[in-house]
Each structure stands twice: as C-alpha cells, then as structure tokens.
Image (cartoon, rainbow, N blue to C red; front, side):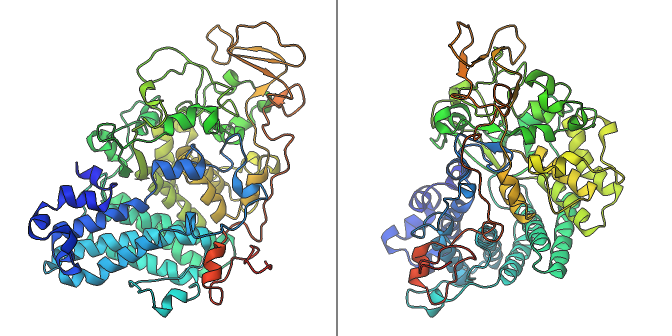
Length: 597
C-alpha cells in the first residue's frame, strides 16, 4: 500500500504509516523535534511533497484531457494561450500557487539535524532537494525569473518581499539540488517513489530545456552550451548505469500501446522503461476521468492534429509527406504502412478496445479532427466518468534517449553511434525497418519547415529536425509538446491552422473499411443513411476548401494570436504584484495591474 500513501493527506499518512510515532506522541502534541527525529515522521511529512507532481486531474484541467495541448492535439475550444484573451490571474492560484509546499520542503531541510541517524537524514535531504528542484523547474519554465528561497520564512521575514532572482541563478541551484539528490537517494529502482535515477532523469530534462531555451531565445550562448553538455552527460550516465531500457517484447504492433495501458506498473514488466509513475487504483478509490476525457465531446472532443499525423514516417522509414497528393489522402489510405506508433495512438482501421473484439471507427461526434486518441485507454468499464485507474508515466527511459540525442545534436557533436543507441533504438522498438534508420547525411524534410503547417523557423539542420520529429512521435500525448515549442522559440506554430482528416465532398464514408458506413456528410437536405454520424457541411463540420478538404474546426473563428515578445512566459498574478508591487516585476508585455504593460 505504500504507493497509495504518496498521494493522500498528511494526517491520513500518519494514521497508516507512523504507528510507532503515534504510540509515543499524540498527534495534537507533535513538535518538530519529535517529527523530524524519527524515520516514520520524516516519511510522513515528506510524502506530501509528491502532490506537486503532475496528476491526472492536473493534466485534465491544464491540457483539457489530452495530456498535451499545442500543435499536435486540439479540442473544440482553442488553447487559451492563442485566443488573444489570456490575462493575468487575479490571485495567486494556478501555476503560481504551491509556495506552501516549498516552505514545507525547506522546513524539512532546515530541521534534518534533529535526525540522529545521519544516513537517514542524508536520504531525506536528497528527497527534499529533488522536490525543491522539481518545484523551481516548473516555476522557471512558466515564469522565467522567480524568487529563490532555500530556507523557511516567517510571516514577518523581509525576504518574502524580495524581487525575482535571475533564471540562471535559479537553474544553477536546481542543478545543485539534483546533484545532491543523485548522490544521496537510493539507486534501487522504485516505480512509485523518487530514486537517484529519477533525479538523474530530471537533471537531463532540466538541462535540455534550459540549454535550448537560452540558445534559441538568445539569452546566453556560452551557458546554453554548458547546460547542453550537462544534459548529454546526465543522459549518458543514465543510459550506461541505470539498468533501464526500452520496453519491448519484440511485438512492435502493440508494445508501444501496452506501455501506456498498465493500471499497476509496480507489477508490470514495463518497469524496464518506467522510471516514475503516478499510481491509481480502483481498489483504493484513487481514480480519474481520463477515459471520459478522450471519448466524449463534453470533455473537449480531443483529436490529433493532421500535422502530427503527417509527421509519422512510413513503416519502411520513408517520409509520408513525400507521397504525391498526400494532403488529399483519405483516412484509410493515409494510415497504410505507417510507423506502427501511429496506429497505437489513434483509432485506425481494425481498431478495437481491450477485451472486446468489436471493430470501432473514429467517432466524429466526439473527436474534432477524426483522429481519435487511444493512448491510455484500457477496458470499456473504465469509460464511466471518474472511473479510470490507468497509471500515468512521469519519467521513462525513452525520454532520456531523446534528450541525449537532442543535446548532442545541438552541441554539434552527435555521431552515428549516438543516433543508433537513441533515435534508431526507438525506431526499432516501434517496428520501423532498418532502412529507416536516421543517419548523419539525412536531407532536410521540407514539411518540417513548411509555414503552412506551422513548421520550424529557427532550425534547418536536418538531423535536429529529425530528432524533433522523433520526439513528437515518441512522446505524443505525454505533456511535452507545448514546452518543447516554448524552449525552441516556436510559439508561432500554435497559430497554424488545425486540421483533421480529408473528405473529397458530401457522401457516405466507411472510415474503418469494415463494410459499414461510419459518417455521412451533406450540404442541403439531410439524407436517409445508416451512418451513426451525420453532419452538415458548413454548420456541423467545416472543410478547408468549402464542400471538400480537411476538417478545419476553427475555419470561421477569429485568428489565433501569438505575441513573440510576451507569450513565452506566463504572467504573474495581479494579487502578487499588489502585495509586493515595489519589488516583483511583471513579465514583459503583461498587465502589471497599474494600467501599464
């Protein structure tokens, strides 16, 4: 039951995990001395730190049920960042909140001297410093400069009213915290608790993010190079010494899908790849609504963008977008002989749910693009709102391979061996033929830089472009894409049209090629049809070329808005500026609450 304890309230943890302490000290008489001098007290207090990690509810609320929201997936409302209506929050809720957790972390670090067992104290120092690093990384990638605190503060402490510290100082402190955590945490694998390997994986992630952010935003090229080197070193160490590897049974037609449909990674052989996961269990009532989010229009009708669909290679490694008239290919044809990960991420011809052999087609009533996500979907009994208990992966080895390859490519030091142990290992697990291996002499794919599709504007290196392609396909729907675009300074990609599957005109369509009609499109009078989905063009469905073309949900909507001088950072809440207006500085371009920007 230990894995369940990570995500419940502190008082409940005392009730189940600190029997020894409870027998000696009533809860209403616990002091810092009694709390931090015992292993059980340290365990109970630090378990609450896990609540700052992403959960199903935070994914659902932030990304509206697709675990990603950028240029790869969309729903029936635009991403808030590109509506032109995003404003600073009135108070300190949301992304700026959870500073109380930081105070708890710093309190534990300040009081560890009370623990006489120095080995235990060192372990909990490593744990607390991991969470402080995680806390600050999340703040920096949203807000940039933030105030750094490494000690608990009282309500009258002047430091509460300090200005933001430079992001370089904060990230250097984050790396120092992670180095401590790597050294002091256990190297024994544990899928639901933080280990030395989790800290090493986070260091890889942090250094890649900040290194590329500083490079592409022109902040400090020398520091960017240093950070990318640290990412490459951390990733290489992980790959060499951790013992984690890509999960594979030699069955590329379902290995990728299976990786994301475990409801107990602790008892699954997928833990060869899974470094840290968030555990959910119907037995203990810890569930979420992810199934309903991916299957219903009321939760956003999430669909994959055709840009993402087109990014997947053919199974033989050739480019799909090199095919003649690929933009006018209909659903069944465009999915033939593709990278098997695509068919394991959306409903495809022949798709059926786990435990049910009935073939089902994409449901255009509940999917804005027709490319309906299937990643994370388990058996149908989990579809009821709030009844999903699939575990959510927070760190896995596949990401580390991608981090290493990208860092080395950005440094200009990548070798063919580097590509073979990273990108090509991922492609091999996916089932792409040996002929599809990425090589150093690859030519640039024009699709990846095409402005029509929101292509990349700040890079032309064909190897980097291919690594970015691989990152999109491998990590699709796992929550990386938005911040990838932010660090690459590619926010403009969010303003490109969002497309769905192609229809040549009104008529009946058998999307999954099983002999029955799945959708009927019409223009004037509603026809008699057996199709379960019937949609009127230009009223219930919009096509890019009028009565034909790709689904274009926002065709008649106001254009997307992205401010290159403002939108890479979130705004500080106005309440925080009012409380500390003389020191806190609003991020550039945002309302500071004083009538100026």
